[in-house]
Image 1 (cartoon, rainbow over the protein chains, first blue to last red):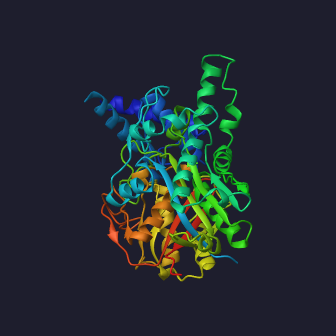
Image 2 (cartoon, rainbow over the protein chains, first blue to last red):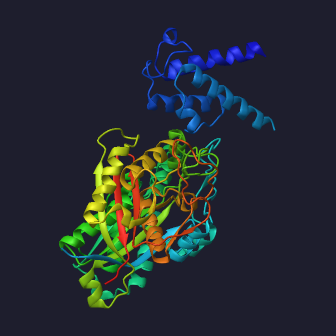
Image 3 (tube, rainbow over the protein chains, first blue to last red):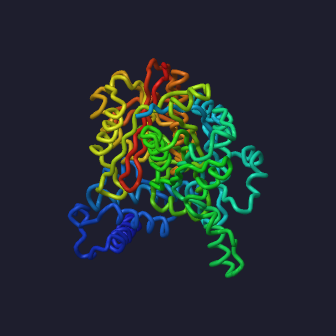
Length: 90
Length: 403
């Protein structure tokens, strides 16, 4: 279970780097998205990739606008993906 | 300068055909949002929109067979017919004295979508030969002008979600300055087709749940479609015809953010409302109801309420604010016109229609937007706001006509 979560975190980190057009080595969970120059247009690309890869539709809500760091984004994405997987199984 | 009045209104919306159906939906909180299914979208993520009902489509079925009209033009002409009938305009009232200003955001979306499919998927070269005149943004305005023989000035604002409001505002300015005596003004949109819906999904501003403007748990808007058309004329023209005056258009403000294409700017939105108030010569305290742009996206609602507080005071005392988009959807280029109709009805009935689906006050917004149930108002003036992508703001003020 722990390793599954780690795998997902790593996958998500790679996805954020790829879609945000940032070098993976520069991204740390505590990095602020602003400092990585990840802007609203990159956000939309990241959300589109999440939909393609995990089948989860994330619209812009209060939780998403509160996201400041890479870790915030990963946690939110992870929660939404898990919620989605639960719903899909139900 | 001429005074400008409204003498007729028409609407096609998810609530049905006509203004009574729209107002009944708005004031009773009876939503026209329903399931929508686009076969071309694999794994459609958002399952609802304020689409026209089967009954409405069936009532319009003959009109929709027109080979040279995309649905967007059919909705515009239908709403215009209702408005003209209410205003009692006869053949002699059109001609050069009557202009047409009808906006749209997407134009002939269905024709474009269908033809791309035939062209790119089916690889057929036999496309709709009338595709160009059906798709062009001004087709709705042109069909309205032809339907009635209105040969005065004709314009088509295409300013996304502000198109309908700017159409009414532009008509008001032209009537005021004497460029015409009468005008059919509003907006039309028929954007609920697979290709358009999918790109809205990708922008992540549509909710997969319910549209809840100003509510803490809001997470996006719900698309809509339809048309709203007003018959507007100079007071002199209305009096000469002995027409019943529904209200007076007293103020219009419009400006641009020149900032971000998508992110709204509260200072520019409040400047826009102030322009409209100055144009009307009204103190903010004279306005008792605001039909907000209120899309239910996180960004819009925070921005708009911030702007409202800057204009009407921090506590928003004495002004009710609501969004009727959860009822008729966000009809983009028709939104400002459909909402102008609702706003004028609110003035005439002295009743603020509710923001339905509202669950919880958002501390970031801190507004009770006439939550879930209509509220009586006692006011002589009302405002309708549109804040569009592209940073285009428009505010209209309508007032009770007291002679």
